[in-house]
Amino acid sequence: RRVHGDLICFMTSAWLVPLVALLVAVAKAQPLPNTNITTYVINLDLAPEQRWLEPVNDYKDDLQALLAFLSDAIPAKYLGLAEKVAGDLDVFLGELGAEIEGISIASGFNLGQITLLNFLYELTAFCTSILAVTPEGVLLHGRNLDYGLPFDLERVTINAQFTRGGVVVFEAVTFVGYVGVLTGKNSYFSVTVDERDKGYSFENAFAAIFEGGKAVTMLNRELLEAGASFETALSALTKTSLIAPCYVIIGGANALQAAIVTRDRYEALNVSYIETIKGEWYEVVTNYDLNVPDPSNDPRRTFAQNHLNAITQAGLSPVTLAAVIATPPVLNNGTIYSIVMSVATGEFTSWVRGPVALE
View 1 (cartoon, one colour):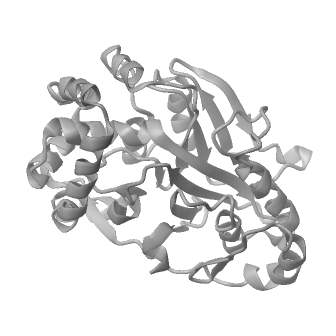
View 2 (cartoon, helix red, strand yellow):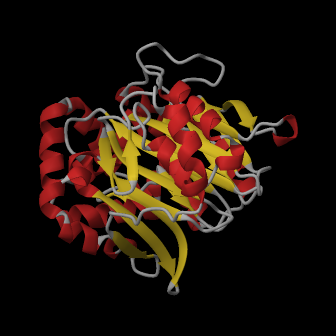
């Protein structure tokens, strides 16, 4: 087994049904374990170049190690493409481009490297996202973010509270040096992004940027920061041209606001909802289309579904959802962090995984 705080992760599913039946009633009444991730305030009232100074200075050594790893692991031609984008960051990314410039100056690292970092995550993430509705109609949103990189991204993982006028506008779990949002929530919607692996290359992604496509993580950031509603966010994330295929998982304030958007570059191929009127109460998304079964070597979705079925809707709570994403193989050696969040309750609790979490 693998232990993290109050969450016990068993390596086989043989224990699952009797264990769940025994513990669900107790678990529902328990609070979530506290986060073990450092939280930083990103002040949107500051000039964009100054917003990330504190975390960049605090994590400069880890960021340097990450960039050194990327320099060795990623072909030089990709850095050349990133440097072309870096030459016109204000055109491609607007104010977020100025944030990247500030990170580059504060860290002392090449602007092209920091730019590449801000597109790398979008094209290499393997994740599990879950939307699930409690018996009371509260929509919960859980996720594991997984990477296959040998570098320990746990070392640069932070919680970020983006404020304006001293008020939190939105929250995100992110990486130092990264201005987009893979996982975030404002008062109206929560969002996670899972890679849709269609063999999309860095060359194609950068070509799409020059053609006017957006990185979905940058679009998420813009929508969260603008205080967009669930409906506005869903429309934009369905219709905006992107730089790569992906799955966008969007939750709102209630069970009727739970959508999974399957994207190619240009449009949504499918938008799926939790149809509570038909008795549905959850949806699990990994890195495969919803109508395609899990491959035999990656059963994360199947295991998560079996675990949720064992819990039953009556047993669903933030704690029992956290247990689902803390149980292998949903939790795995590539998992960087986990989170449970909810627009309805304001819940936003995350945990770093991997070696750092087990020390």
